[in-house]
Length: 72
Image 1: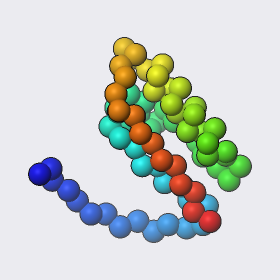
Image 2: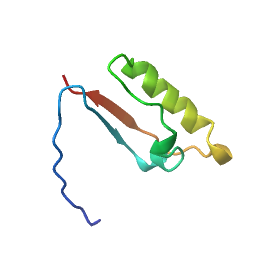
Image 3: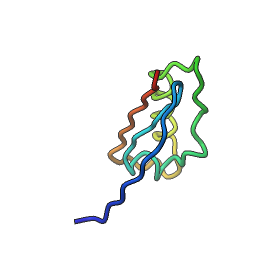
């Protein structure tokens, strides 16, 4: 069983949360992701991230999963 930790964060209106697999963040670090603001189309943002993953160094394909949620 892998070790796990619990962390509590304060979420405010307008905040976004990205949940992704290692197949995404190992190939494209979050420092290389586009910024998300109030006008960002979330579906377009996810498609752009998918393109970044596919174009990443070594063209390694892994189980890449990402979910982007904006809190209202």
